[in-house]
Each structure stands twice: as structure tokens, then as C-alpha cells.
Image 1 (cartoon, rainbow, N blue to C red):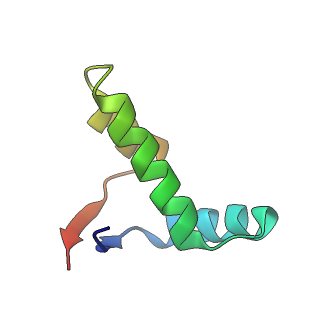
Image 2: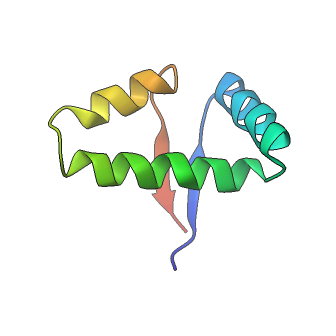
Length: 65
């Protein structure tokens, strides 16, 4: 498994934390689920990068650690 550092706007981090609290999990696990689902979906449909950014309310910066 590879660990990634993800930088998101505060609003997105708050949404992830809120959703994680409801599910009894961590924001990091929620973010990993969203990212994994998006990567899998990108193999099926074109334009998913735009849809992913839009679903999070903007753009994200991803960088491997």
C-alpha cells in the first residue's frame, strides 16, 4: 500500500470529518474511499477528473509521500 498526502480546502476536510463521524470511521478512510471509487470510475467514463473535482467543490492537490 502507498501512503499519499492530500491537500483539500477546509470545507472539504470538514465534510469528510462530518461524514466520517457519522460512519464511525476517520476522515482519512473516507477520503481514501472517495479517491479509490473515483480512480475505478475513471477507467469507465471520460471526464471523471472534472467530475471528481466538482464533487469535492473545487480542485485538489495530490502528492506522494
